[in-house]
Length: 437
Image 1 (cartoon, rainbow, N blue to C red):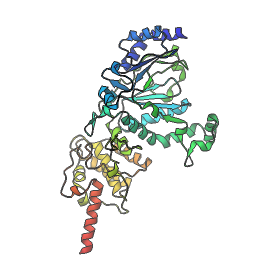
Image 2: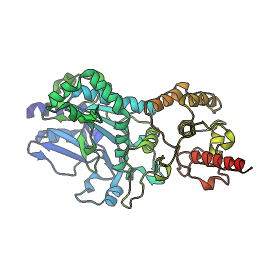
Image 3: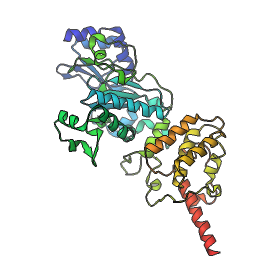
Image 4: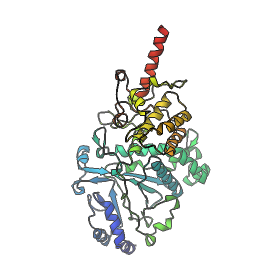
């Protein structure tokens, strides 16, 4: 088998693909007796061949990028790691015993990316039964609330992973059950059907996970075009996981055509980040217990003690200055953020999704460059599928009202923290004045 591995790693195209992805990353090389020294690096294609001559069976790389990987050492404090870290890539590891379910999960995550206008990402077969899906660091915003994004590790990855799991959960459940019934799945896993349920419904994450173990500092994942020595399969990049055939990952069949993490558009994942921050399952906190990421569902922006009015409020005189500016049309960048703000704002005022959709389609014509109508419809459909009532982003969130230049506070703004609270508070004051008369 060593001879077969050596022949494979002697290929120039394979060496090139492995080394180009390993740039700025820590590398761990697997030998028969275990992993070699850490930290290590791959600088030149011939390095792969030299390791293979010494008996290397696989290559593993960090999801973090480092200023100098060779300066890393065990027991480094978070501050030291933050200083040494240059960035990180989002790597989602779909972990399951069922390849078909993994294909479905990968397809759903790709759909979720595209829904958030993220079209540049990479997918590769893990070499086992799952897939690795990667989004380059450059795709995310450079800073969040004045803090460099490179220091949001591993919390930044965790918040996005949890959000995506929550987003695809129902769709994943439905599509898995279209392939297998719950009794068949339970039998295969030697479990009772009840063990695969949560609140009486099939929980797809009892048979599949978007692996949280991957999300830790200096954690490794199998490099693209590296061999899984247990299965003699190659971790090969793919275009469409649904069409993936296991024979394409056999050592003798591999074609090193596709790269991994080599395709991105700067800050294209900003919309995904904003949504993940808003809807996140876990509230990320610093050691001092203060929120690390200012999403729009922090304590001061929760739905606690907030009730949606039974009769929709449509009197524009009660709208805050920021919304009054937005509804006249966005004059420069910020149209998609305006859609997000207004959907949540109008929902908080009791509007139906149909009314919001009709309003936004007319509003869109006022923008400096109208969005595709399909984009607005897709956002409304997303709201229908994910029945979550969330307030619009808080006034002090720099990415939203301030970020698109519509935060022009009046004297009443100092009394509130959120656009929806502005309208409801002003309505109560007006109603009290009328009763006194």
